[in-house]
Length: 179
Image (cartoon, rainbow, N blue to C red):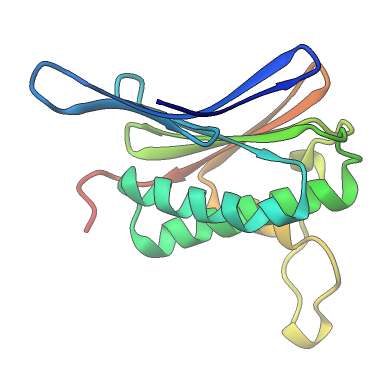
């Protein structure tokens, strides 16, 4: 059922809720408010306007979705914090395209959960920046927290410039049989 159809120049944005079921009655995919989840591909995606008021909803989406992918609560919170830092840093440093969107997707790849973060900002590879050891708390510098989090939370990471977009992918270990 369509809840909202808006025409923005030549782009049409659909905000709807659709749930598809297979022959056994199991949910196969759903789409709601810019979020798409496919049980067939295992990829969960969401888009958020490039706006400060979207940082918390994005972090909450990452927390809830990564938990649904089998991450323990503490790891879901860590991954949500990484996404929150990436989004906040994009808003502060990346000269994001007005009216643009940040796209976040999550998927399970074997014993890892993958987060892809894509934003329409100035080219910047955060993996090219060397991250120094964390100083004593009373001498902690301003800045660099997001980079430290990416390095400390991820088992691996990758950056790619895709046209006018930065895409940062991070993987977090998440064995399915872990308690």
